[in-house]
Amino acid sequence: MANNRRIIAILIITILMVVLFIIFLEPISYKPEYNLEVTYLNLSTKLPDTKKLFDVNFKYIINNNVCNNSSHLQAVILVTSYFGNVETRSAMRRAFPSEKLKEFNLRRVFLLGIAPDDKYITQKAVLHENKRFSDLIQGNFKEAYRNLTYKHVMGLKWAAEYCKDSQYIIKMDDDIVINMYKIIDLMNKTKLPSRNLLAGYILSGMTPIREPANKWYVTNEEYEGSFYPTFISGWFYITNPKTCKKIVEMSSRVPYFWVDDIYVTGIIAQKLRIKHYSLKAYFTVHPEFLQCCMRDVEKSQYDCELLVGPNGGDNNLFFSFNEIVAVCYHEQCYKRKRPLNETCVAERKFTLGKGNALVETYRLA
Image 1 (tube, rainbow, N blue to C red):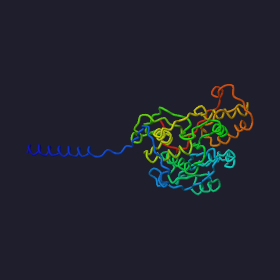
Image 2 (cartoon, one colour):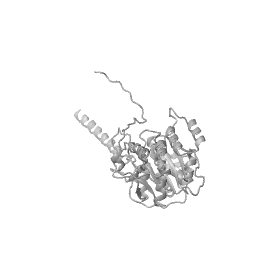
Image 3 (cartoon, one colour):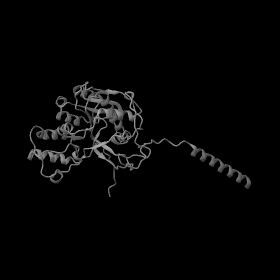
Image 4 (cartoon, one colour):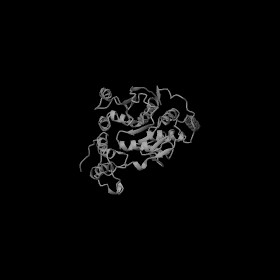
């Protein structure tokens, strides 16, 4: 009887060892590799198939050729905008209608995805908006934080295809305020490269966020490295059609990564050896500084040296800011005697964002 038990035990152990051996021989699940070594790319004469964008069978649901083969465009502005952000788009249009942009040889489009679950704005309303303004570009991917790279690359793809003769391409987010007159002045007076160009707020030494509760949480499977390559903030940057074309072509060879500015201006740019040009001196991360600029223009006619900053949740700030600083374009303003960060006193405003409220019950002691 004891011998039988030993035999059974040996058989069970043998079976377990075989099962474990088979498990460990199973192929390891695929992890995207991001080889950040610098490489050269032999560019073809055509863009990748317009019906493919990463893994999406891509098509434009709404398309507008605002460039219309114009040969003297200074810049085309690509605004990444959420489907339902009608108010922010309205503020930008009121500050600079399309006809006014044409006076400066500029064009502008808003980049959208689809949002069938949006509670407030329907696709029919977006189609009506486009019928009125003819400045929307909409792709057939869903609006989501993790789909921002689709939208970003779609914009560059569209610009390379429809606005290839424009001198510059400006990419910006719709919650960012820009000093349009200063941007125009910068493009006129600053000599920027005609080929490989990415100019904006340079970020380096950034590490992936590994905290699961964070909105920008990145797993090791999504990005294995301990540091991101140097990249430019997606808030605002200046590039050109040739650079757009190179980035779009390389995107078909580099695995998708959902943090769009890191993917486009970091991972891909490093592979293409595209040099970054810093415009950091013209940026602020505090909307209060924009408020102080407005106050100083109105009160003392001091020139505002800032070009880019966040709207701080105030969707109308783009309009009000540009309406006030326009004085310094039409009239003479004075250089401030002290830096703005030494004189600005403003109310710090906090926004609760656009998330959904989470209501829970608690037992009262």
